[in-house]
Image 1 (cartoon, rainbow, N blue to C red):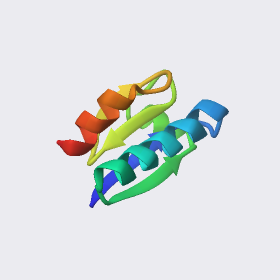
Image 2: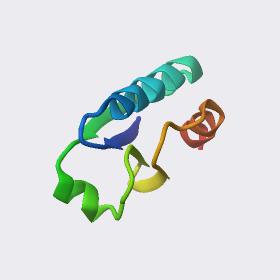
Image 3: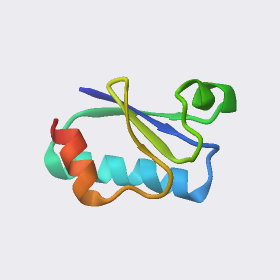
Image 4: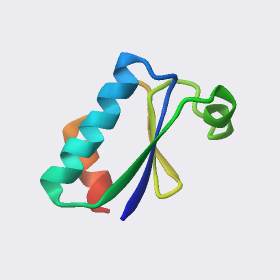
Length: 78
């Protein structure tokens, strides 16, 4: 199971990002646990200045804007 954190204040883009991650994981058959991190101090601790951010298994893979489906597939398959 992949541990995924979506970093952001809960804005529309952050919610959409979490949905995109779940949709892509379902499509690939990858088991995921998604946590939404909305605390600004916790987000800053990751060094993310632009949200939404995505952290997969402790590694920052994306920051700022909606991710591309191709990128999500690659990150989840790794």
